[in-house]
Amino acid sequence: MLGRERILEAALALIDTHGPQAFNIRELARVLGVAPAAIYWHVPSRNELVSGAAALVLHGVADDIAPGRWQDRLRTLLQRYREVLQRHPRLAPLVASEMLCNAAFDAVLLDHVVHLLEDAGFGGADLVDAYNVVIAAMCGFATLELSAAPDEDIEGWEAACRSQIAGVDALRQPALARHLVALEDRAFILRWSSGTDRPLASGFAAWTDVIVRGLESRARALRRAAAP
Amino acid sequence: MLGRERILEAALALIDTHGPQAFNIRELARVLGVAPAAIYWHVPSRNELVSGAAALVLHGVADDIAPGRWQDRLRTLLQRYREVLQRHPRLAPLVASEMLCNAAFDAVLLDHVVHLLEDAGFGGADLVDAYNVVIAAMCGFATLELSAAPDEDIEGWEAACRSQIAGVDALRQPALARHLVALEDRAFILRWSSGTDRPLASGFAAWTDVIVRGLESRARALRRAAAP
DNA sequence: ACCTGAACACCGTTCAAGT
DNA sequence: ACCTGAACACCGTTCAAGT
Image: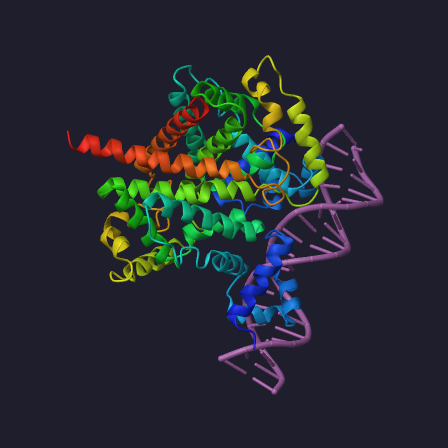
């Protein structure tokens, strides 16, 4: 007996090692010791296999969030999402879009988000906007951080990156040139190491800090505008 | 004569209409009135075709940014990036990863980012963190907003979404249930309309507001910590 | 240098047939 | 209900051959 669950777990394992690009049904069938066509009895398409794997990754992100200040709960949510992606970096580029498209959303997660925004003082249309801000914040940084590695050919990529950086013109891009040494291999677009090899921990801390401060400040401003 | 440029433009046009998934070299060759193999003389692989198309989309995002307060320049950058994606929504999920992986980065853009962060008062390691925040902010919201549409089968997706929303339990997810009507089809994960059909304009405005306020607040806090 | 024709290897999916 | 075998249609890529 195959079963949808066993299939999705095997698919996740394969995607984790080979990446979603190289993942194929024939190898999945071989790993499961079964004919390729057998898979189609349980799962309708390849797409569903990878989106099912992404759903496995996302499962339970928002369970057991400790009560406390809304700021702390938000930080926990952002961290949880990042940790989940860190365990499956090759799925990073897909998890966000899966979360957006899959009809089987995690109601627990969404309730947490709305609840903490209520505590922050948002309501009505402003709460909807703030909700979208939080979801974007959750996916934004971690997706970028962990989806940087290109498929294979690492050494060539690093060399190309370095030569681009070496080609920065101190006259035409003075600000960039001033901080280039500090940014090199530590900053988006200017790094060649992947988010798994070299996590951007302090960058992520700054990210959560900016998001929390920004929401605090915006909530205050909206409150001021509402009550003159 | 074919030429890399003509090929990439044709590829971009095809991806715009059919999506990157359905894009294939044989049709590209047909559109160009040429044998499939001819393309390989100018471009080494299919991957390069789609990343080349994404690079076309990104080209010139940061040109002619008007001088002014760093907050306004940052807002302009975020808006520009979103506008670029709005013109090519099917490429939305790929543009960010292209920007991260492609060695041919836009030095003008990066110089702008570093420059405005200097003006905001960031320096040293804090500037590197803030730089990563800005890049993530630039890609975060717009990518999510514009990459929501699944390939085909719209009506089925909308129905699945609606039934999920109808299944929210007011007892177990009270906060979510309170705002469900306002969130429906207007919020990430809870919407079925795509970002092109129904732009999240006010959500994006809130996003830039939160990012700018957050950076302002963080810069102040770092300044306070540095000078006791 | 630039392109064609034809082939190769591979892959998602289907379907009649088995148990 | 669940799985196999074999086929179909399609696709990226290569390569010898043409001009």
